[in-house]
Image (cartoon, rainbow, N blue to C red):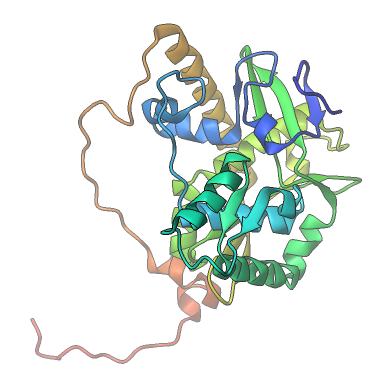
Length: 309
């Protein structure tokens, strides 16, 4: 289906701008909205388009590269139509001519990237295509379709990188990361709510897509994570069913928070004013997992003095 205004649940082929606008028959929340509301409703509302006094969210180079890499890799939108490379004659944005060129394209909704950033993005695309695990997932579905369904009187929406076709029931998302080192990768998944977003995609798939799955257990959940620096390593992170189920419950709580905040006209912050500090413990076992766990690590020499206290 394709329509400028979404008037009923289903799967729609619409552009990203329409998806993120007020396009549904009821107030709508995306996967990113649910994550942001779960963390800090007040901060989410401060930047959301529904706030008449909203602030403009700045776009960093890291975010720009991630979005461009996502567009080139998934094929969900025409890269040449949405992105432009800064001409070689402009080495920076200090001249009037360079600023005019950039502002004209950004005014048309085109994201501008540099030649060096484009080199990185192309390197990422080549590395991803060399990953048989990632390509096996990407090649069994339709990219960048938008799902709309209703929950608690609110429209929920999701835009999975790939909608499974035929008997493929892998729900996945592609993410660019600073590092795929296990501890940093797990922290990024938590900080950016990627598994929580995957849970919302799951709810949308169940509500709108006839996959033939008998139940929730028939799906597999994968985050395809790729480093944004050479050699652009790719890692497929599988998410347990029990965790996805818990995060689906968290998303429903975020919907309820949204409803209550709109009714009260008050958006609470990340905490109630007081936070108790807890020392976070990182276990060596997680770092040693690639070697088969702690038992798989080689022994070590005793470097401590025998007479040390």
